[in-house]
Length: 362
Image (cartoon, rainbow, N blue to C red; front, top):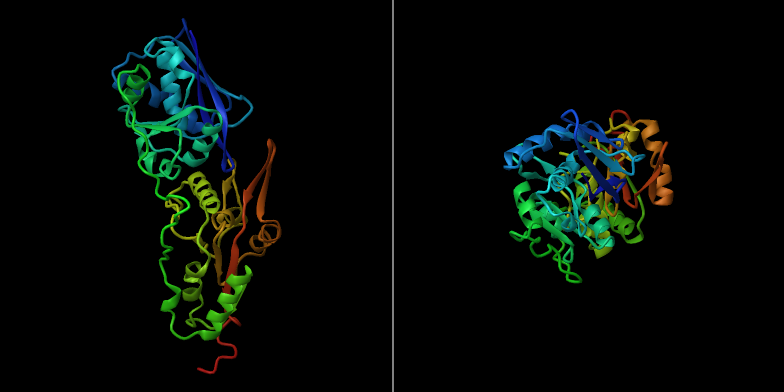
């Protein structure tokens, strides 16, 4: 028997629709995944099998073929665990087929059947909203889902809850009130307050002029003169975030959901300060599945390059096009991705190798 379900996959910072088809037929007991899945998607076979069994449903001893369409687009991550499990259960008759048409599914599965948080939730919600479907996702993504007050999303904690909801046996939760109610924007906060800086009148005046005119800034001075301290307080005098700017930042950080990028700035503009050993790919983004780099993570914020003279030349060259065009273009065989990159570049460096050229204190 064949069943179809809908999900999404990330392409840059946008979500593209994915149609998941399952065929269950007589044959040697095995599950085959097709449609350019990566290793994490291939391993979902074992997670789905264990989750279905531990949720109290029998797993069929039949031949199962799972097709992820479009077949020429790479699929990555464990986010397809939930839709694969649901469509298999629908093929076995545990869920009515007509109940699947108005929903899309996204989320990872633990071996006990509980749903695990998945990245890229903000782009997924925006993509599903255009298709007039409701997205069923893990409860752990509630914080991200709450940013969109009218998000068409339902939250579940386990695979069993999803099945019971689709069989009209119980309701699912909706995200709590959005963090930010527009057009009311909360009081702007910053980890470091610009008004705490004592003295440094010339440097503070230069930073205020740079912020007012959206200029980039280079600070040159000996070690210990306060360059990094001043730069870290610069976001505190930038204009408050607009709704569109916040949504752009949320999409970027939701896509780049790694241990170092898991916290999305909500009440302040981004401030990124990469180490001078960073590679061009780390700065501009890239990889087999292109990910935003530090340039894109600084979108609508500040990119601070401390010890500018220590950065690799090829890494600094990657800044040329983003500063001019406001975007980073990454080309791959299947096409090109454009990541947004409108940021304020602030750099600091010493005047010489010893760092004290022109200083009157030595």
